[in-house]
Image (cartoon, rainbow, N blue to C red; front, top):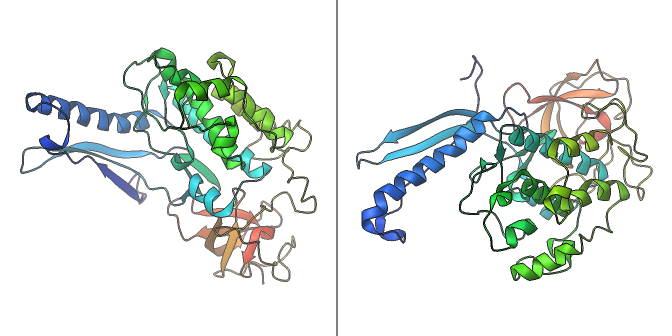
Length: 370
């Protein structure tokens, strides 16, 4: 319970390895294990410092003594009901321009909040981006560290920034610019560019060969001009040439059409907020695909899409949100503040945000209006 509200959480705990399972001298094992436990709980501490709706919240963190004498560290965080960006792209395919802007907004918001408190994520990749109804969220803060901390470099091969591939561990390897680079790679993959194609070389190859390919710049020609303007600066070879998270977020917010809840209100970029040019007839709110499996949305039922109509309260429907995910929900009413929208309670989520407003044009199965 939090503030009288029931929250679903997930508990993460660290189970100790046996002394013979790690290459640590027996005399140093206990000290090593204590350090590992401290590092484990640092993830919870880092999460608790960040205030963002695009990052899971922490409910509690503690240690639990066992009969064997080991104090097991654990922490409980908010449960994210959704699927990873990696799963979504793998099963459905690339996101369109609208969906990419939504994704970039949400993750840049998370990264801005992280950097604001002096932390760096260090492992930003599609597997660590979760998609749930209406938003994306950044998870897995196991490698989060202070921006000026030096130590062992962690991360995922294929997502290292060029400064992390020079065989020298230094302060800039842990700087915010590394997160921006990894986000650029993540967004390019979400847009349909294969990881090897970004640099035109094997991203898991010899470090120096990968760095030489990075000097030439990313290969983003398959993307629209709008998306290239967002992603390319993030992939600059030199860290100081990459935008700060806050500046990149403002750039993305300017690309949303006027009236968007995520936009700056300026909506200056031509073509921003519109669907890809190959589908000019598709409504701006209608995603390019439905959900898992890449199937096309089913034809809307008669009357669906009309601005008028009474909600078919209690009807089960499947909707597709702006990030391209399909969700099963129950109609709870008409959104009187947004003509043409209905309120749907998602079956996969709990709490205050499980009822959301969607245009009836995004319903792909079921009858939302009577």
